[in-house]
Image (cartoon, rainbow, N blue to C red; front, top):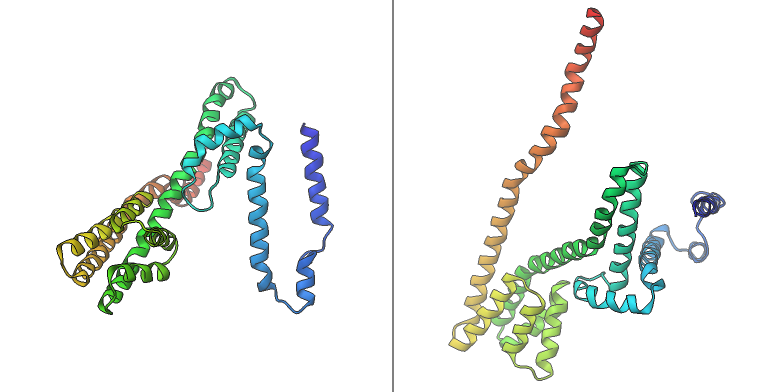
Length: 290
């Protein structure tokens, strides 16, 4: 097995060295000959690299038996809520992590007894890596929705001031909203066009996108329409409150920054500064003494 990895790496190295530096290949060269620029090739190369990475990550899932893939689908399907994640990708990440982390630990410990005893724990940790990645991706996804809400509330406010009713304003805001909020709002608009009640569509939207600010906006719209309040005043109050809340969050993050910088400052920067300032003097003193 070791010889196979060595021969494969040597073949990849020969293929990389066989092409002159900066020389495009295949279709890229034809695009350059046709008058295209190198900037036009950058998106193509990024897409190609992304496809290669996805194929590499999905390989363990593709070669797994059918009954294992069924179990993986049942366990990982609920984790694929964020865009860019799928069951094959998460399964491949878990397979590589559960094998690679123990192997790396064993190689670093030179197959010692402590490394052999710690390897099962590292393998179990590798199986939890897909859940960690999916959780972080979901948090980033919901944070993107939260950041797009103030502009969407402003668009709703503009549509209502222009004389549109709630359905028309919601449909227009869904068309002009930024991703990923646009996909959630567009799905709710399609449900209402297919005959669903507005409150039911809003309730399903809140369940699909559990962002507190979005749920507050939908509830305030429904309550304002039921009680006969002005939609424009409700939207104005919501837009002001969400922007004040965003400002408070930014201030809180800024206040926490010095505390987060304290740990690397004490354990990384301060020892290096002490070594650079006191170290030479200490060495010269030792040479004079001895």
